[in-house]
Length: 403
Image 1 (cartoon, rainbow, N blue to C red):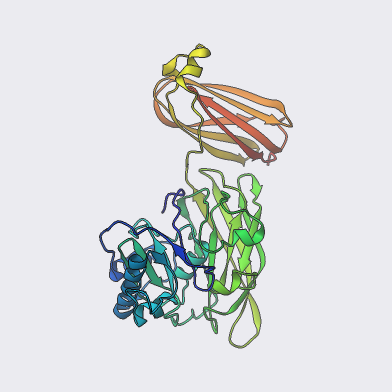
Image 2: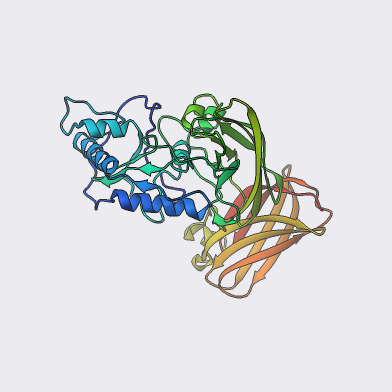
């Protein structure tokens, strides 16, 4: 999916606080409605979400007209001013039923709404049946409310994103959408790096896009135990009315790299009969070995410490988390080094050094280093410091109890 540094400026129907003026974007190749819908269908199918969405040529042309209106006036807005150049009734209507973006390109591997939880949730709804979309002159549009009449599933079903068994999922994200993100309504400051949002979409007898849904219980469990999460659903203040039937689970902190997580949810849904009922789902996914920020000392500092400028040759460090199995806890670090070197690990708790380990790396290239933790090491939160060939990785992690 998308690189987690991507920051598109996105707007959502009904959440717009005011027009945002932007400089005209440079000309880029158009991405057509059929292309965007095919990308969306493939993304949904890869995670077990019903695909088969039809591209609506009339809606796509309306989106194209609104894109041109935005480019002409340098604005990303959900309506059009008849007094401004490029106004069309079709573009104005489509804009009020669509999610919008600028300065990013939709492709087979990049959805510009990946870090915009409310927008992406609408695009993943199992009730979407027809979509119009177009991207031109640096502006993009995709309808999410123009046609949401796909028949519900015959039995209660919860679809998830990421889907069950997904591999190499991102460990974190910094969400950004106008005018607010779900996390912001739960006290998470804008710009905070959290874990990846987990999406749940409900479908079943008598359910619609707007059906009431409420989280009754939800959890996320990883190698260090339970993860601190916040949930959102149709009853959530501010964002609830803009979410399709379902829920979101948001980890408050980034997840460990190269680790398997199990999510579970029990969701109350209310269909056309007005009678609440519950449906549950459990699924798992595995995170990628994404490298965390690494500090590499300057050549001058290395020389001062007698290491020499060539010491700084570690190109990547990644923390793979801690796993406990059959009474043995294993801490994993993934590193890339350009020559044989030494890896040093330090665990600190309450300001005191609790454990140190040194591993000699004989070869070069990328490898995973596994370090066994002694049984005497108490469970709890520790600071981790790893140094390899002049590079330094520092983070905080939970050491699980022996089990």
